[in-house]
Image 1: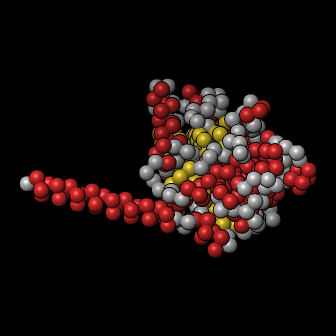
Image 2: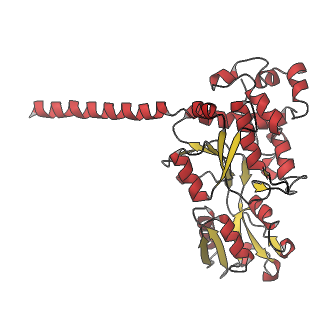
Image 3: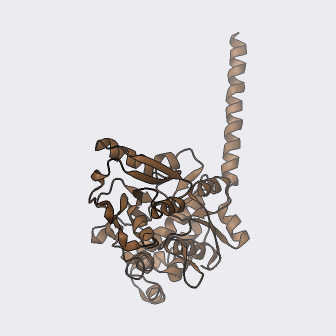
Length: 345
């Protein structure tokens, strides 16, 4: 019996080892960078119809914060910001596309949560926007606080974090409410715009963007409460660390560029004439950071040259030249905000 148990034990160990090798082989096989380079195009998943983030402008061109981030990654990887493809998809479809590997990165504003990040086949990368959930109502509803929404009807979108946050807020404040859930945020907004519910709720920057596309924007107001923390991050398929590093450090480069005064307009002068060792390393004049992630020495230079630094992207899409939103937490750490890049060292 001891011999039998010993034999069974060895077989169990061997089986586990073989399974482990199989997992390692699967992970090792993941080479998104090679696939993107071979295809010659970066495939980004975006959620359409949100002003400032991803929408069709008057010239028929897809523009916005999410689109600029896609261009930046494309420039870093392929040396050309135009070599991108954007696919419009709802939130549930975007998650499934990530798991299936049919898109290379999702740059739309999805909240980074434990449940989405762990055991789902997805990897969040780094926070691109710090946001928080709020409430939008019609002014004629006559309320000035979310705590006055007892008995109200809320429009939700399937798969979003909003419904759970509202449930927590209502429980904490002794409120009751009615929920109407739709397949996408766009459908939820249309239902609210049509008067099917009292409250439209999503991240506050999203509310500001969506209010501009209401039938009569001036009839709506955003209430003061922020009921959650919503760190928004691009997503990549799980299991390819190099590809994740590329997305993370491209976004880091855009943030670091703003901190060090590098813009799309002065970047050539900065690369050629700056004596700052940090700037020299990041822009590829010294160091070999690109080699570590399978890219050329100009990867960060190409990304910043194509779309500008983080501040330029913000102002063009969400700030003074876009939706007119204040940056709030999304200012640099040197100015009291939360944005900071790890050092290029």
